[in-house]
Length: 84
Image (cartoon, rainbow, N blue to C red; front, side, top):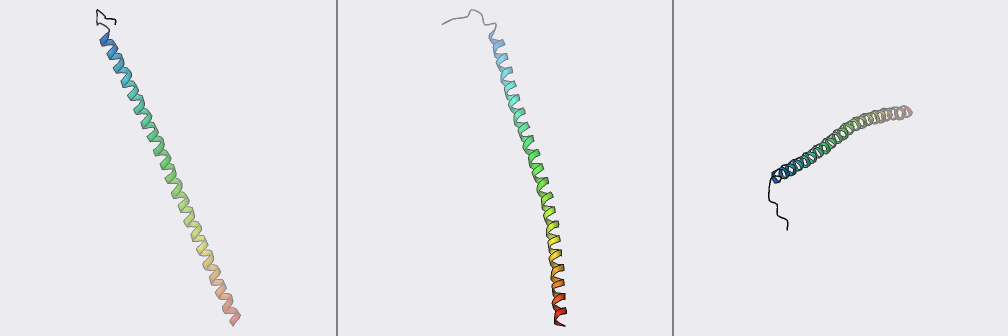
């Protein structure tokens, strides 16, 4: 086993290891927050698309109901006219 006579570099090595560890944790925190931001943006886009499509569906449903009501009235009118 090698024994060193001086310990002048041990504190420098500990500081370097501490700095490297802090950098690694900082990078991991940045990656985590970035992935959270991407997920939040995607969720916001999905929500916006959902409500946009929902409103278009409501407009189409209104048009279908309006069309079927006008057809129903004209059929009643035609039947009553035939009975006269």
